[in-house]
Structure formats: C-alpha cells, structure tokens
Length: 213
Image (cartoon, rainbow, N blue to C red):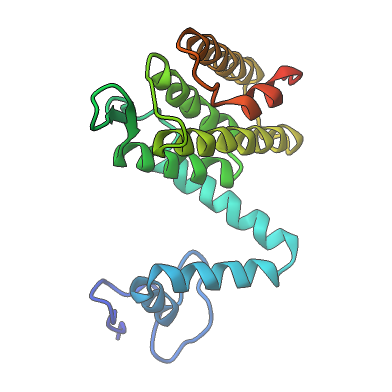
C-alpha cells in the first residue's frame, strides 16, 4: 500500500512506510514532507551547513542541479525590462521599483549557480535602462546602482569560472554578451557626463577594461 503524502500531494513512487532506503530519482517521503513544509530560512541554513561540511563534489552537483532547474523554468530568458525605475516625488529624479528587485534576484540566482554569461545578458539591459535617468546624490537610487555595479563584478567572475569549467558552449555568443555589456557601460558613462552625475558603474568598467573572451 502506498504511504500517504503528509503535505497533501502524492507520495513518491517506490516509497513505503516499511522501506527507508533511498529510491533513485525520488526524494524520501519524510524528507520531501520536511522540504514542503520548512520555512525558507531553515532551508537556507540546512543547505549551507550541508554544503560547507560536504566534499566539493557535492557543491558541484548542487550547482549543476540548480542550472538545470533554471534552464527548465527559462530563467535565462531576458525578462520584460519596462518599469525597472520610476519617477521620484519631485518628478525629476528616478527611483528603483520592486520589479527591479525581482530582476536582480533572478540575476543573482544565475551567476550564483555558475551561469555568469546569462546573468550578464540581463545586467546589460538593466544598465541600459539607466541611461537618460537622473537621481539624487546619496539617495536610494544611487545606493541601488552601487549594488548593481557590484552584481556586475560578481557576474563577470562567475562568467570567468564558467569558461574555466569548460561550460561555455558558444564562445561567439559569449563575446557578444561581453561587448554588449561594455557598450552599455560606456554609454552610461557618457550619459552621466552630460548632467555632471557620478558614473555609477566604475567597478564594472574596471573589470571589463582588459577582459577578453
């Protein structure tokens, strides 16, 4: 008799109350029940602890599974980039929106799992969306742009590791991603000069200066 799923779904095939052995391709019933009901902070702590105390091969398998999942759910596709920034209270300066936060979360899951070039493709559009905007010095917008600058640097490092790991299938496409990002960063720099604004992507420009794929 198939054991009931304690969180409301069907039990994994092959699982039973009398068989605690792992079944290839399925999650143990009790473990699956825990995963389905645990809060996000607990899951994060458990995953970090497990990866920190496991051989490097476990972390490699984890990121490989993460990449497969991200490809399956089309997280590598460039999302709709309209509405990333909105007018501030004075009508002249820009402010980040919740939509931008969602896009940045996607970017971080990509470069964090070793998909640096996919994340750079989206970051290029984010940088491009800042051209023509104005913002207050030391305001929320400037803080957000500094964070994006750091994201670009980390995504570049992820892309370099992607190359070192022989996971780049199309180098021509990778070169195009880098050149598009370089062009977007240069355009941002020229735009900032027009209104005497502080160029927000100094770290990215420095990282890109001598990088050739």
